[in-house]
Amino acid sequence: MKNYTITVNGNVYDVVVEEGTSTGAPVAAKAPAAPKAAPAAAPAAAPKAGGAGSVKIEAGAAGKVFKLEAGAGQAVKRGDAIVILEAMKMEIPVVAPQDGTVASIEVAVGDSVEAGAVLATMN
Image (cartoon, rainbow, N blue to C red; front, side, top):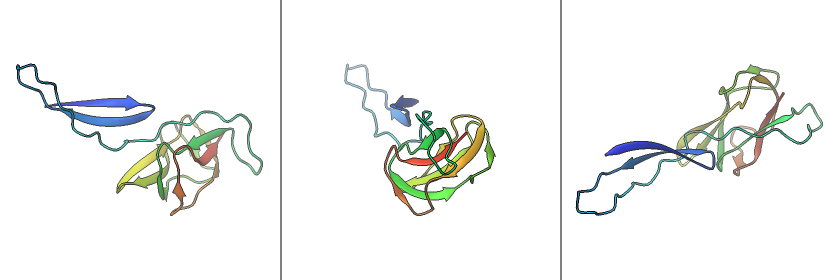
C-alpha cells in the first residue's frame, strides 16, 4: 500500500492506495479522509463596517464552530489557527492566510457554518 496526499479545490486528503497484482487489474483507492485544514481565504473586495478587516477567513467545509483560537486584536502569523471547526467528529483548523492582526471574529462556539462562510477577518 502507498500513502498519498492529494489537494482538490483547496481541500487536502490523505489517500491510501493498494497495489494490484500484475494481472492488469485496476488499483483500488480507499475513501479519502476528511479535509485536514480549511483553505486560506482570499482578500475581501472592501472592508466591512464595525472594525472588520480587509482579509476574510472563510470556512473550507461545513461544520460547527468547536473552538476560537484567536480573538479580535490578536497578532497572528501565517498558518496560525484562528478557528477550529468540527465536522464528522474531526477537528479542522482554519488558519491565517498571512501575518497580521485579527480584526473581527464573526462566529461563536457552537455556531453551525456552511462552506465559504466568513468566520473572521484580519488586516
